Image (cartoon, rainbow, N blue to C red; front, side, top):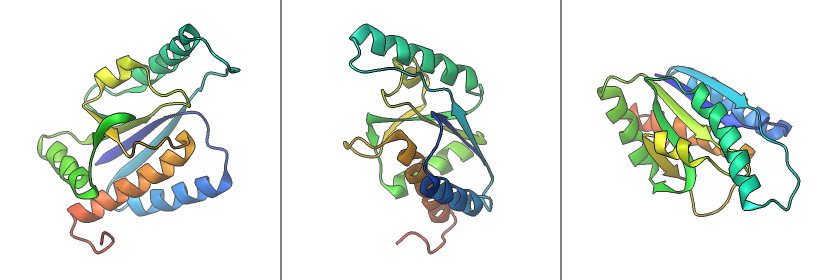
Amino acid sequence: MHVQILAVGKLKERYLVQGIEEYGKRLGRYGRLEIAELKEESFAEPLSEKEVQEILRREGERILDALKPRSHVVALDRGGRAMSSEELAEEFQRVAIGGISQLTFVIGGSLGLDPRVLQRADLVLSFSKFTFPHQLMRLILLEQIYRAFTIVNGERYHK
């Protein structure tokens, strides 16, 4: 399976880069991993609602342009569906059985995701009602993707 992560913004913290590299290596057993960093709009707060919507629109355009047509798209959003690790593994299996070999996970910028991206998504997934830094979300997401693959393969990582 080909797993793609589209993430708005650049990863800066070395400890996050190291963690992502580690899970990237682990995921190599199960398929190909691609992480694409998309330009994050710069802004100074406070923002008007119109400015927020314009920033989301611009970032959303970049995300939509980067999506591959036959990919199963999972957008990360606090308002999405909460799943257990086992349910995420079941989703991977369902997608694979359906003949789709590419999963694309989308992580928005600090303001979230454009509604058009959420509409395009095949699944809107929530990791928590908490707000996480979008850069940290990459590491958390990769760990859960790895965990899901180990569950699918009956390996001992998941307890």
